[in-house]
Image (tube, rainbow, N blue to C red; front, top):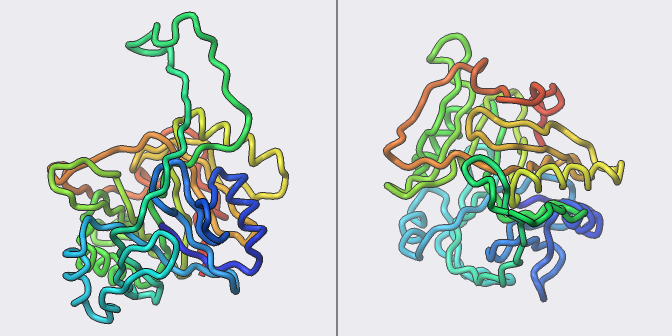
Length: 304
């Protein structure tokens, strides 16, 4: 999950509703949930606009016990917030808070009805039924990953791999293969298939959050959410729609009223340990399979 500080929580609630999130029943505005049963995917603290940090789930308290021995770790704490659970708080090299949590109570899943597609190898999946898409926001399922910019690139990537056990999916270089400027990292779950990346780090003179990324129901949902946000004329569109090369997601990026960037995506590559890692030149990696090239305002965006 992601965490940010914002001065006006009601404006965040408006944006999160327009971009397809909701508040869990009985919880304050600062906790934002989605269609999947995770209690919340975003935490908003009242205060100056800023990026607070990221949080990751683990399976059990045994994982927390191991992390509690890491340098500057908080020790295991009981979470005195809606959903409960336990956590260990850490600080990554740029000073942002990283929480590792377990045992947070789930909320009821929000059902999202999707019609089948008459396409490809199943041309009669919806035989006799007309496709009619509802008007409204996209249907966010869960948070997928966070992206950070930092001049302390190697130190930051090393910390996430050594402390949290992330493994490289793709490292990106410019000219010399030793000149790595970007790193896509995934969870190591052995034979189990996981998202192509849960953390992407980019070398940059700025330090901060580039974007938080949220999975939606399907590719139609990406496009529907785009049209819904566009109608308000009060949110800045940052990039998209297109399909990434690394990760392969169909993406769409928007900024909230304070400039924090949020990605809606569908259809990601899923890898396991056997897929290994790759070293990819930037001119092949940081482009789209289809769609426009990333604009400067996106490439150089960092919310401190």
